[in-house]
Image 1 (cartoon, rainbow, N blue to C red):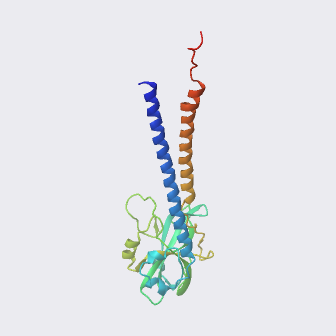
Image 2: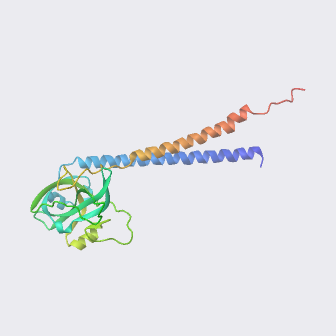
Length: 245
């Protein structure tokens, strides 16, 4: 393989590598733009007027209301309370307390993420003390998807303490006409529960970081090629001695 052929192969490989890394950086920027648009949509949804139970039930697609604020009136179904294990809040691990709320004047119900409660690390099976008011209550919150599912060995578990909760299965288990979305209750700590929910974050900064890495790699490849294939060739080019001697 002569020197010129090696130079052509190396140049071609460099151009391809730079093209790939630049395209990957551009893709990350496009993902960041998509996430920014999603974040703007979340903020716009949160700025909508507060919904009541009637408006919530009449919505054609409850999922279209995710992140919108609501104020609901109804009665708790305390016998159907579930504690989701291994859920963090403020750097501590505990339970998310989930209780269905039967909407006033309706057979419909919505599963409420009422808040967070610490676990007993000496007795992991001990249930924390929760206050669940009887009678009609009024709560505020925002429409949210069901809590994210964590890795779980074996099938879905039952009982008061669970790793995950499948809303469709829970609807069958309780016999309640649960809506397809949940309510993440907001407000000051009460009833033994904290409600310092993490803000919705779509990870825009992560994509900018990845884009910077890809563009940096493209620049590094270009600089190395320029140095080794152009600058060094010029500096260390053999001198023509045919004119001497």
